[in-house]
Image (cartoon, rainbow over all chains, first blue to last red; front, side, top):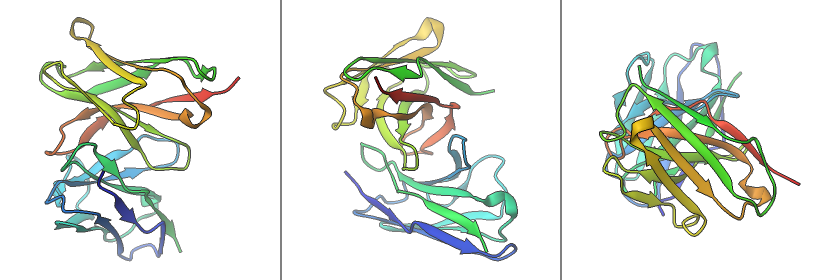
Length: 106
Length: 118
């Protein structure tokens, strides 16, 4: 199975940029997606195909990368962005998720 | 609009079988695949298995011996059955619309919390 590695937490000031990384144990090409999960809610798709914004998602969110190294960015960070963010690959079955990065406000 | 909703018991005895139903609307099960994803509290999601749009199934090898996914297209429902439940099967179970390599899981149900306890 492809293992996705994320840093566990990130603290950012409101109005600043937050950058979250995800490293895959082998190449997933561009089959990387990013989800936001707020407390008590289901995950919500934000970015698909490494860099494509899902429908209705604000342009403050963006993604980049290919192969094994991916980046998810929120710029500028707003208070409503407090959540845990997960990367997920769909290059190979089984689809796998990272362990999540919890975004905190300084 | 696209919606998915899970239903099933919130409490299951150890060694018993879990049965969940996912009822979908806004899309056809013969055009889109549906996956089950579970999430222990405080941990990342884990893909369990998929009902392909053509009726085929795929399972996570870690769960394959205990898991069965089926569907009733006339009722727009996908079913999950997992036997021999243990306490580490406790968590929230979601059904999702699964576009696989294209966009991942684009719609999720609200989830159902399942506790395995005597």
